[in-house]
Length: 281
Image (cartoon, rainbow, N blue to C red; front, side, top):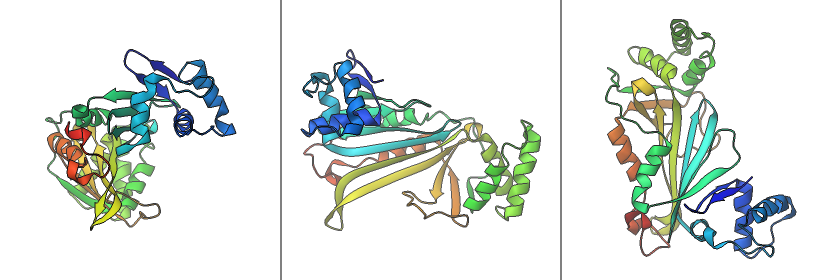
């Protein structure tokens, strides 16, 4: 069920509710399959009897109607993949965050200058001063990763047994070799989550108008720190990655991760559709 907090102009909406709002914003009647969602929005006063949109929706709808930059954040952990993101509009910037098992996401207006901080918070970027490793780069295959993950739960909570099973699976896959072999096994065991941030905007490539995309993929390995996944290189197209595809992980400190998140965002001159980049405001 959708809801909202008028004191902070924040909303809990499912994708189907956002679809209803998009139809109404365009002056269209939502299709029959969205009528129940329309009624839910009417019950809480965000939509009137004749399809009028509540004034409190102005900031959210202005960003959704004409986004300058779309930021998608995918975090995969114990509860599967959870989707977050940010919509940068001409007049407002809106963050949305999912929750495990919930249909609705929370949409909240944020200050443009806090955008990088918000993205770092969404992926739970933490201090990693205690994380050390003699290995700073690991190159193996996606097939080796699949082999390691396939035995991860077979150790029945016994850390030593789990480590032995992962090492055996990696050795049988033929990659990597020591010292990367041992470190990769430790990374798989310590893996908290993997996450990916993608930014997209309307820009130019070789003088032609084109959709521009930048992305960053990271392994959060808790006590063993952060590892940027350089290969397979983002963005990944469907069917592009197979068991023989190279997997390259590079140990990267949290300060550098912050810089990489910042670099995902376009500069004002890279944007089409706005005289001023709200990110720089």
